[in-house]
Image (cartoon, rainbow, N blue to C red; front, side, top):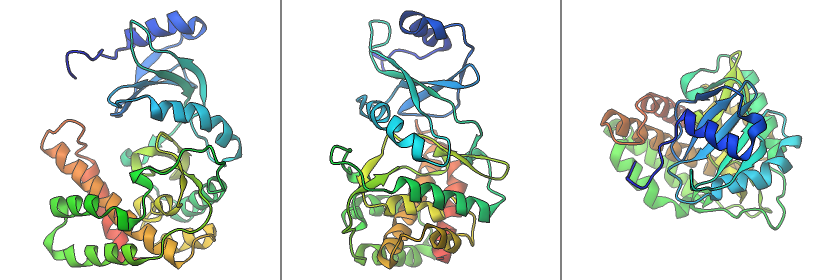
Length: 298
């Protein structure tokens, strides 16, 4: 945190609520571990406050404010829905949003033990999400680009973390994704950041999806990478059977993007082990397990 940043504390959150939403100021405020671009605070039992932190612009929060109320009613899993807006002020010069709280445990701290149920649940969620988006929906960023346009990022992760004994296999998966035909369908809604910290589990299965700040309209393959990034080994085939909307090219792109996502998780784990800000030591094993699933294929 540099000298110009405001430290986000429970007292600050309470003060902001008193100023802008005093009817909520009496609820208990508790910090939620994790978060980098935005910091989360529990507000009572059913709400949370999402505070812009390291994100350089409020774009992600403003996107969630605009579109989650549109998407949430048709999605079969709980997602955080904005209920109050916090404006920049002298006390805190950034945006903040009061949202519904999605109960459960983040997958990077939990586990899926009911693999078939989780595969069916994720497939149903993505079928409901992946519908044609309106013309005014946010467009894809570099995160939503086809694999052939992501080679620089892949190479960076590959050089940093891939063990020599599996390097050829990882590259073969990526090269196949790059060679796959690109998406030619209409732009559909895409979550854009389905990694283990952004899904919630309870009773051994998926129970919620959070953090829609990267949502866009485009190729659904990035979300389909979750078949390997999130689900237990041996369930990807069931997922794609239930999803029933992915052709061979989409699956090839998704598998390559899952490899890249796995490498990113491994790099974040490596950064955490080295004490680099934003690094997460527990993501290293999570990423390696996901990469192993990618290499096993469907």
